[in-house]
Amino acid sequence: AKTSAAASPGVPGLDLQSFGPLVNFRAYASVLGFAASDPAHAAPAVAEYLQALAGSGDGAEDAVFAALSLMDAPAVPDAMVAAAIARAFDEKQPPKLVGEMLAAKALEGRQRKGAPSGPPLSVASVAEAVAKCQVDGRKVAAGAERLAPLFASSSNEGMETFFLVRCLQGRLGPNREVANRALGKAMVLAAPMSECAMTT
Image (cartoon, rainbow, N blue to C red; front, side, top):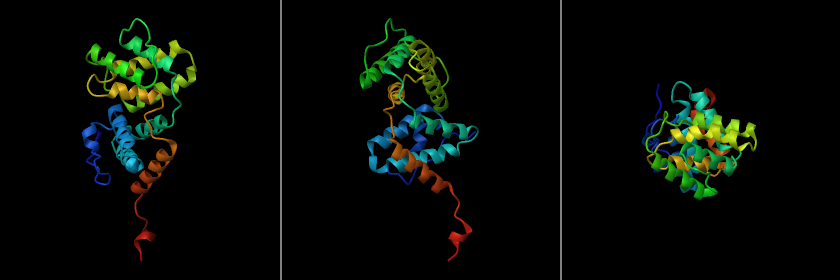
């Protein structure tokens, strides 16, 4: 199945191919990181990612649904994320941290733990775990059990684990306006020109 896309000529500096398979969480986080660093091109960047993801082969519809779900998902409580980090990285106690400090602690644990214990982290697996955590409510132990495998599968190279925490905290972005604009732009880019529009 086709899982990556060529560079995106419409958005300066955005190279989707460099992010690896688009169904992986690393690609999703990289695009959103790019969008956050360049607000003027945030919606076009996310739109090109969604369009490329839609054409990525088997399971593309589920992957697009998962990406859109994550963009609008409620934040997971920090206590639940901290408990999952402790479980995944053999910490004696959950770190009593929040925000970016908790994300940095998770990255430290991932690097100390070494190679991941599972397949590459996918957008769909993160979205599924987040949705189930919403059902669990504030049951920290249940949520930690669902989230720990995500951390165990996150890469020990780069910032994927850091971005995973920020995603769970609802801080990876984009905001709803950018997401809606991106979705609209992706639909326009994907829509074939109508016969009427081609006539003069």
